[in-house]
Structure formats: C-alpha cells, structure tokens
Image (cartoon, rainbow, N blue to C red; front, side, top):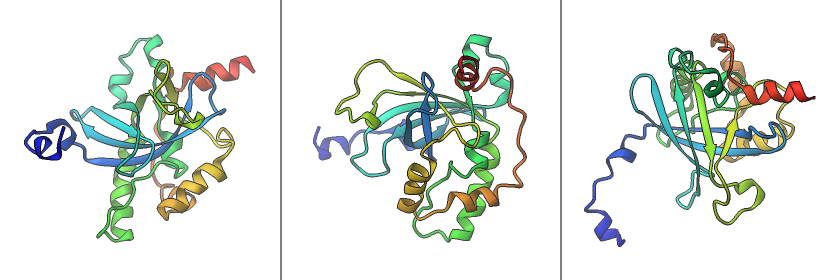
Length: 207
C-alpha cells in the first residue's frame, strides 16, 4: 500500500499506545539460559488490563517479536492454577532498574524520573503474560515455529549476562539501571500471589 493510500485510513488501535517500556525476557522453557531485550509499546484496554506490542528495538525498522498482556492482582487471583503458571510478576524488573521508560526529547531528566517513578509504582503490582513469535536472539530471519512463552527475571543471579546485556542497553539509551534501582528503593514490594513465576519454581524443582 502506498503512503498516500495509507494516509487515508484510520489507525485507531495503535493511536491508543501511550507508553514505551524496555526490559528483558527469558524463555519459560529454559529460564535464565537465553535473554531477549524487548521494547514494549503499551495501551490501556481499561483500568485493569494493558496490552503491549513488543519490538526488538526502538527504530523505525524494528521487528515485531511478540505481545504482552498485563493485569492487576485482583484479576490474576481469579485465574485457575494452570493459567497462573503462564503469568509472571514485575517486582524484580522494577526494583532492579532493569525495566525503564525511555525518555522522550524535550523533557528534562529530573522531570522524567518523577514520571517514570509513578509508572513503576503501578507496574510493580502487575502480572504479565508474554509470548515471543520471533526468536531474534538466535538469528532467525523470520518468525519461525510456535509462539514461545516467556517470563521475567525474579531475583539477582538469574540473569547471567546482566553486565553485557543490561549494561549494553544502558549505554545505548544513556541510562544507569543501578541508579534507577536506588531511586526505586522506596517503592513498596507487593506480595507475589502464589502461582506466578512458575517457570522459575519448576526450574528449582528439577535442579
């Protein structure tokens, strides 16, 4: 479709995107073995549900690699035990400084840190269900095979290449995740509802 033709269409769903978050996921089938950086472009479906499109970068030619849904605790608590196994918490992502919102141009660092802190106070309570469709980390030129369930990192030491992956990301975006972690010390850690982060629990049982 030409640019002229597309300019006549209305793109209502993507126009609702209101937040860009960056973090890392790991494969639920082998947690901690492989990590993938994901740029989340998210919209609020309603007060309790967010839906995000995931890309491998923040560039115009970024590849769409997956989707993530985020829900509030009261919805997660209603899920059956098998469904809960597909969802992960965001506590470590937030408290470690791994998860952040890239700063837009024209906004001061101080002002953005305040906005980011407000957002993190909300995200730390949410549960996410994420599938990746394109395994860019292994060099696939196309989205091959079935969708892969992903999960989050939940404690220090799980992310083996933290310095290389997160450190490299920090340098590209001009941020310091360690300083963000320091700024977020005051964010209250919610109690994680039993059933979330099952990939890591299962991994412990097989060790």
